[in-house]
Image (cartoon, rainbow, N blue to C red; front, top):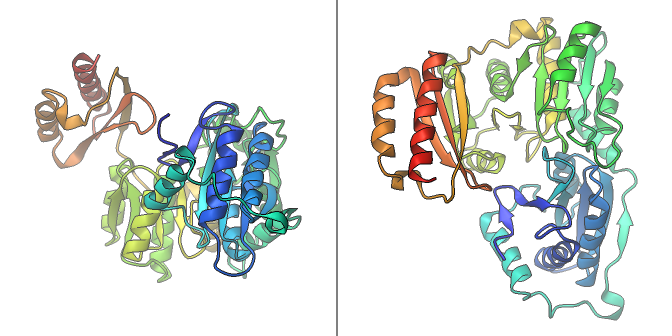
Length: 448
């Protein structure tokens, strides 16, 4: 058996190790045991997206939680950030999300939030992993009347909707705006339309008919083509494409042009700086964010602080440095004043608020000039640290000297697959593609 936890919780093919009901039950037991308060009831919140396998795993998880004397609170399909919010709002000891985010329906995953609404540290994940794989939790069982109960929290969607609306300026409405909204047949299929409609927008809905197997299928943040087309044909003001668990968003302006996470960060940073709400004089993003974002922030007198890929690393850096805006190019945007994790609906609301305050179309507001960027995936037989690949450092150094300050090269091994990701950025699109191809070929030759 390998490790349970990857870069974002546990993930794999549903009903295959590690995403089996047996493992879910043991994880439930470990979470229920580990996050007990010293006094009173111990409550663990369980949410999910719309995958067929969610039924299989949430009930197994609840069984494990109840077996150690804790209570399980079911909230049904809700976005990942909703579980983080409700965990703290309900004063629960932990929150569990059963979701594989943007992956196809046949995958699933388990993400865990502590009582503070933040994802678990590596140390806590390791402790849970040890309990499960070494079966050290097996001896602890609640006795007789101490066995836990399971409840359904019926008003969970309403609580989250109210929370989201409170992040939108009270003096504003969305009256007069036409929004195309794609919920990817995922966790936000009910709450997202309600939020925008209750604030006054006309909402044209896509991806709001989940059937257990159509989540993320040719729709949502990974496939915004349907939103682009509908924005153009309907003359909408904005398109909003969420992923399966709605923790990230890709936005489309009124001309049908993509506005990605980097552009959202630049737009929001400028507005927050103007209003005196941006903390720390910086924005936190990952190594994948475009050089254009760094340049735009520098012109505003702000810094770009980079982390490893993964929203949890962005959040960690934000918390340590006292920053309140961060995110990823892929659309995970974290507003730490309002949420503890990425929230696609919340991010879209902040962009809509800027549109309303400025009375300008989004195409005039999304000002970021991006550098051409190319990404090549290289499948290999085995992964070693990049500096151990013969001749790679010398090759990369030569290309970095050529690119100078107008480009950069990033090579990183995938955290979940036997492959390397080669990213090259620069002014000349044709040249950076050539450089990426040469580097990829060199890696393949050295590690066939």
